[in-house]
Amino acid sequence: AILASLIATAAAFAPAQQAAKTTSLAAFEGELGAQEPLGFYDPLGLVADGDEAKFNRLRYVELKHGRISMLAFLGQITTRAGIHLPGNIDFEGDSFSDYPDGLAAISGPDAIPSAGLGQIIIFIGLLELFVMKDVTGTGEFPGDFRNGFIDFGWDEFGPKTKLRKRAIELNNGRAA
Image 1 (cartoon, rainbow, N blue to C red):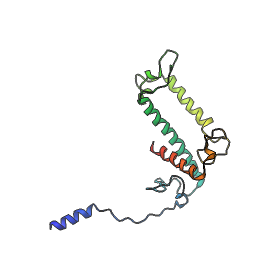
Image 2: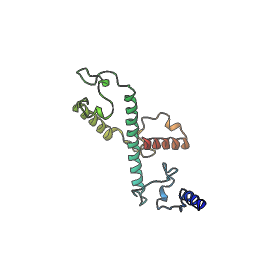
Image 3: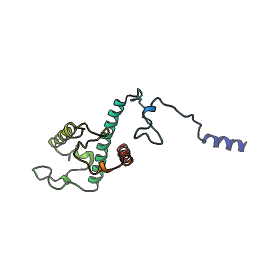
Image 4: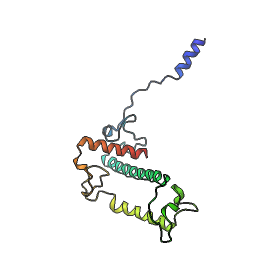
């Protein structure tokens, strides 16, 4: 009886057998970002119809939000480490380090003035409308904002290196 109880207990913790799942999204299984362990992951079925234009738009949005998240993460780490921009944030002599880090910088008793927050929001809007997009229409992939201007050696990389670097950026954006 004890041996049977031990076997039953061990069986409860054994991994369950699962059948292989198939998906109608085979069109995107080989796309950048479809990586182990999940493969192509679309739990809401946003591209279940296989529309490539919709997929490219969602990939563009994913890259853009990932870039914003990475910048926010680095900004949080930098200011928490005590590193602030030099100089004053306003004409009254308040320095950047006089304001708290994180969310306390935009809300609370010691937050930056609302006019300063408004300037930040306007600046982000201007970036969104005029800078952070494929102006020339010559981008190699969704999210390519070089616009024939900024290169940093990208054109010298081979196709495998470009794909690897794009995958790194996508995964870092997902992690942030």
